[in-house]
Amino acid sequence: MIKFKKILCPVDHSECSYLALKYAASLALKDEAKLYIMHVIDTRAYDTEIYKFSPYNLDEATMSKIHADLLKSAPEGTTDLLEVETIVEKGIPFNEIVNAGEKLGVDIIVIGTHGRSGLAQVMMGSVAEKVVRKASCPVLTVRIPPSANIV
Image 1 (tube, one colour):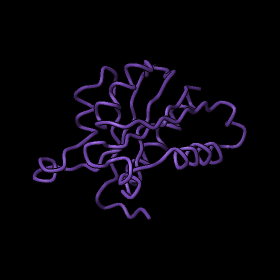
Image 2 (cartoon, helix red, strand yellow):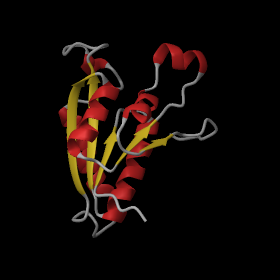
Image 3 (cartoon, one colour):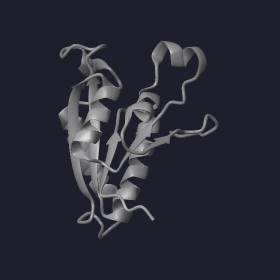
Image 4 (cartoon, helix red, strand yellow):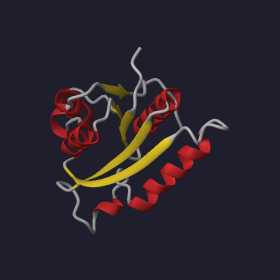
């Protein structure tokens, strides 16, 4: 059985992202692994003044809150087992995620995907799909089924 030591979970404000974070935290708790929570501000779409208005971009204060909330939501008595580091980078998301995975030497990347296909895939792309193709480690993609009613 594989035991993870380092897990990278890129996040944004999407439901898919938060579901991926739950999976990543669960794996980290199970294996007593270090969890890296990462957000990339896409510099192709946002300059440093405009990015903060995008619903998918998080600043360092929000990342710290996610970190604190994750620790609070961990099962009682396990927070000492969950080692978490938050990372905020600027650049092209899939490049920064892949580079961070290699630099940190992670065992797995857990990433949410919107499951775009067809024209949406061509026009908007898929960060998760590019990470799967480029990463040097396994990638677990997490997608919310279209029929799910998640609030």
